[in-house]
Picture 1 (cartoon, rainbow, N blue to C red):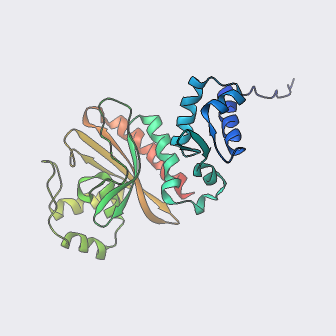
Picture 2 (spheres, rainbow, N blue to C red):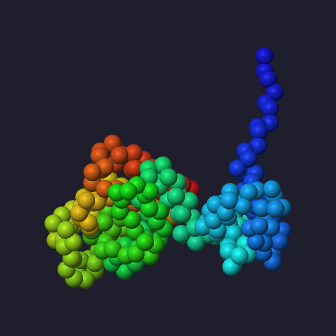
Picture 3 (spheres, rainbow, N blue to C red):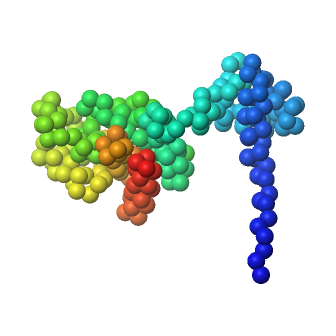
Length: 249
């Protein structure tokens, strides 16, 4: 016998978050935490964490003691194709970091360097983290090899002609033959690895990210060597490929 579906019970935390956003949007001149707490019946101690999270995600902005609607709300109304690349990649980076609890980034090529356009650090005590905007040499990162693999032969020749590549660790691939072999491997396999090539004790894996068939960057994860097993690498690749597919859709 078929049963009619019952409406699902509301999730209190979600309702509370929506109530806060709606209250702040309704008060464009801004509201202080005590006003929000009193109006919505939320303890100030609980509200402070919620406000901090909403401000971190830019759904609210804080101006002194006042909270106002932030640019994150505008992004929800914009068609995805109109969003900046960083805004499109950020939710995918956050989701992967949450699932793996390893530092996850979206990297782009800036000149002959990798730049962390979006990055979310692992919460584990032993981790390697990038700062947003930080740049590293292409040849020493898995992300860099993926980005080099996307270059035309003319641009790749220009890269190799640009000068010597610094040896950052004993494992850094500096000579052209070794690096070209790794670039060809990235083209063939659709991903690249680095094993203690930028920093001792850190490995990385990266996959290219495309929009309209063109490589616009790559998703990458940095993992301490002591945790970098074949099983974790394969799981990480599955998640990174999922990110790349979502960005391309």
